Length: 97
Image: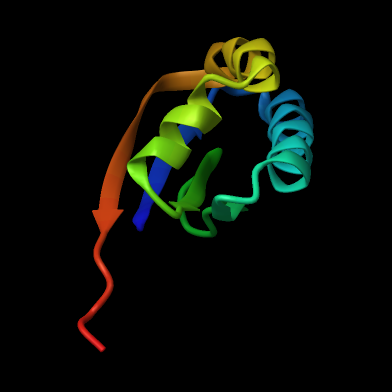
């Protein structure tokens, strides 16, 4: 299992475009990638124009396949153009059960 949260800030005036693009990407991921267990964007409450996505894949190979899909490569450049800087990733490891 590979799970992480990525945090990002969006340029002023680009929030609606960002939301439309990530909504489109999310719909395609959830419809076409059975090895993607979680793919959900959130608006951060306390940080202006900031968002996060939680992604969880069954394996590193599943994430690699996700990154190589045509729709990912079509949509992500637009998302990147909306970002004010880069993003940070924090990997999450499950507690032993």
